[in-house]
Length: 345
Image (cartoon, rainbow, N blue to C red; front, side, top):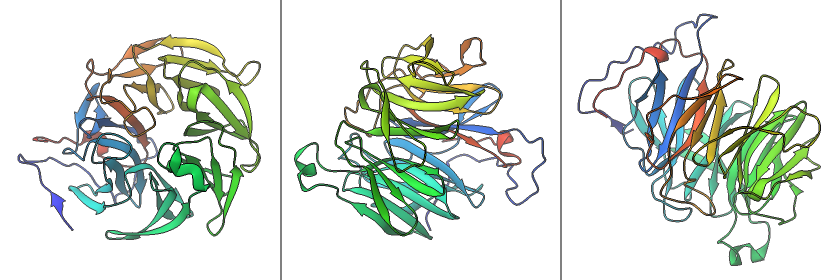
């Protein structure tokens, strides 16, 4: 297995196998594009903790005490190669290569690690260890799909009611996989892309192209409950019992669960809001240009902001993360990750 070693020394104060104190705070990570790097938020600063991992970091998940990161090596939805990198507390190693063009989603389902990729079909791979990945979902949907945009793909993954829910890259198509069989639960090509899933008040919501919002109470039956035509709805996140939404137009909106799901305007960002995460205390959101999807762009104002329920604060340097903050990810249970320092990346 090839491990990358930085030019300068790396001080790693990680004890992955040690017991984690109950009051150990969560750790926040960010993935950038152009170039693709992983950053750690520590003491008010965003510190790079990886070398360049391709063009864009698109997804993250922790699995068996280690961090896995999905990337694409080139700009655009078709030009790059999908890869998965692993950080084990000592260094980075490539554990997945040739996974179509983009590894858009990583998730742990029923104890196994899965990767959702595009653009050779709605595909999901199961990790078998080492550098081995097994293709378990390969859905081409309709024969004419290749005529419009170049085919299908997996953009988003979620676990709901014990099943894996899959959102498509080019259409508002949604599938459900129970670990053995795939079901087409939203088969109508009504639009382009399911960017994110978020569970709220017992229902699963899906953020879609041109501001559409889908909802399901069981993961199998879906309906549109919002249709706000002012750019894509990139990201959703539940914070303090309310559903927050980040739009292409830079709007951060909040819905309290009643009335018009468009909700109320909380903040107007200077660029599209393409990622969100909460550590329980604050809501964080990242801006910039989307790297792996329909209408991708190599430019964007790449900032990270923090919201405390009353006001928004910029918590990064201005335009610090290349062309966009593609993913924000909370990590729980890594005892000393908050004290990690990397030099020479």
